[in-house]
Amino acid sequence: MATIDDLDNATLKMESGEAADSLLLWILVWSELAAFGALLVAFLVVSVMDTQGAALLRAHLHPGLAALNTVLLVVSGWQAALAVRGNAVRRPLVIAALCGLAFVAVKAAEYTIEIRSGIGEAGRLTELYFLITGFHLLHVLFGAGILLLVAWRPVKGNVVMIATLWHAIDLVWLVMFPIVYLT
Image (cartoon, rainbow, N blue to C red; front, side):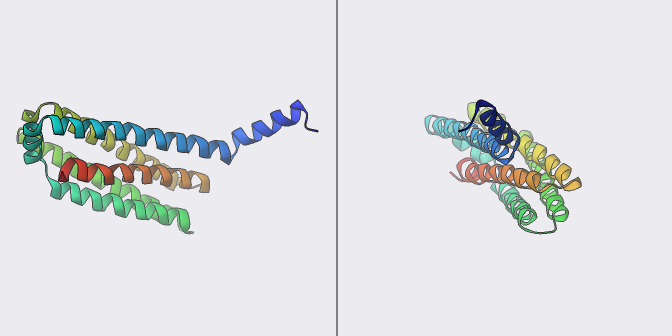
């Protein structure tokens, strides 16, 4: 029969092991997806309520640059997956991070063009656009930094965790791209 001490020891082992790490990782992933989901639903609702503002916003967006960013994130996600599956870890993680940083550069150029063209005239949708895409941009920048950090000192568990988070960031963009740029 298990004693209280045995149960406490089992709990400590689980809390310090992979099961606890995995649970926290998935809580983080699902909370990120929920936050972005709520923002995208708000964007869709405001787009339906303000069709004139939506048309004005879309006139200022650059789907070609957003498509380039989609390619960058897909290639980056592929490299992160290679790091998890392969023996070579550093190179794919660095390539994934560099693709993420290229995403940041393209997005910064896109923001510059949009601001100079008067995107602010679209009102609340402009605010939501910058909130959603800016929040995602910060995730990409932070994630690229973590990819580089993990590449510097790769440990299998850390590689799996950052690759999982990176795929969540990719997934958010893959949902965001058609909603924001193509509808």
